[in-house]
Structures are given as structure tokens and as C-alpha cells.
Image (tube, rainbow, N blue to C red; front, side):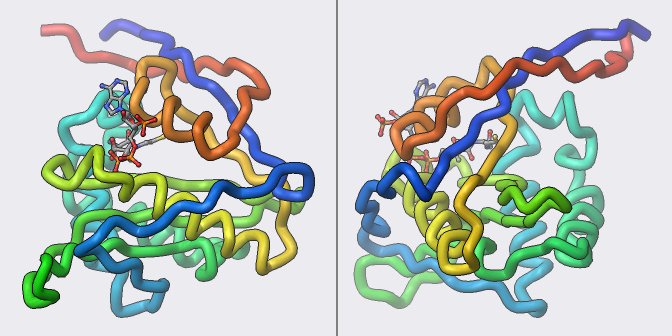
Length: 186
Ligand SMILES: CC(C)(COP(=O)(O)OP(=O)(O)OC[C@H]1O[C@@H](n2cnc3c(N)ncnc32)[C@H](O)[C@@H]1OP(=O)(O)O)[C@@H](O)C(=O)NCCC(=O)NCCS
């Protein structure tokens, strides 16, 4: 077993100081607000979005559907869980008749009153169409409506697609943190 340290950035946006860019949901997609009956759908999308990504090494729960179901239950039962910042993306197709769950984001408010983005994930076939940006903007509007202006998140330093997206929306790096992970060697 080897202890490996993964570099991560803590990023923040201050919605009091900064205007959110206008982000439209890409054509053929819909964003659905949180309700309890969507818990399983969020877990499925989370699993399909993260299972093959580097974050699955840092957070083993991402590596199995059961782990993602447990994580979704934990998030939705936390005291600060914010339904207004929790959205599911669904692909409906050009004619509106297809149906595929393909994106998820969840928000909580921590005890200090900071908003926190939990997990933004888009399944691989639906990436690079602006869906990640649309989900993030929708969640941030939910924080704003709830009177929460400073919103933070953590991202692994090698996750260039996510970092580029967060910067484009207006997040700035606050500090660097390291997460220690025990990697099983063969
Ligand atoms: C991060 C993620 C949510 C982005 O979703 P998405 O729907 O592709 O996001 P968007 O289409 O709105 O934007 C993607 C941006 O990343 C860029 N990008 C995509 N792949 C990239 C790569 N390999 N290197 C650098 N930039 C990349 C795109 O060019 C785009 O930026 P731009 O619009 O400024 O050009 C998605 O890649 C994902 O689910 N990744 C796995 C889960 C994850 O790591 N989540 C973040 C946890 S902190």
C-alpha cells in the first residue's frame, strides 16, 4: 500500500461581487429540479460520470453504483442540503421523445453559511456541449435565490476540463489542498 497525495484546488465564486454569465441549456436537454424520487437517477448519473475518472481513485464511492447511491442519500439527508442548487439534466432529443438522464449537480450550505457544490457530473456521450456549464449556472442561481452568495468547491488539479469550466463561470482559486489516498500496489 502506498500513500499518494493528490493536489486539489479550493475554488470560490462571490455572487455578490460577480455577475453570473448567461448560460443557456443546450438544445435537446432539460434541467429538472430536485425531488426525493430522483435520488436513484442522480446516483446513476453520478456513477456513469465519475466511474472512469481520476476522482474515482480519490473517492472510492464513485467506483460503484452502490457507493453513489449511498453518497446521494448522505448528501440529501445533510442538514444544509439545498434542493434549489440540486439539478438533474435529461436528454430529450430534437423531437423531445428521447429520454436519457445525463447530468447531475448537488448543493449544500455548510455550517459557516458558505455554499458548496458537491459533485458536478456529465456522462461521457453528453460532454463538451455546454451542459456542465448550464448545470453549474442553474445551481448557482439556486444559491443566489436562497441568499447564499459565496459558493465553494474542490477540484483535482489534473481535472483540466472541470477547472476550465469553473474559471469560465467565474470561480477563482482560494488555496491548494492535498488529499492523501492509500493506493493498493499489485
Ligand atoms: C467536468 C464536466 C462536468 C464538464 O462537463 P461538460 O458538459 O463537458 O462541460 P461544458 O461542455 O460546459 O464545458 C467543458 C469545458 O471543458 C473543456 N474541456 C473538455 N475536455 C477538456 C480537456 N481534456 N482539457 C481541457 N479542457 C477540456 C471544454 O473545451 C469546455 O471549455 P470551453 O467551453 O471553455 O471550451 C465533465 O467533463 C465531467 O463530468 N467530468 C467527470 C466528472 C468530474 O470530474 N466532475 C468535476 C468534479 S470537480
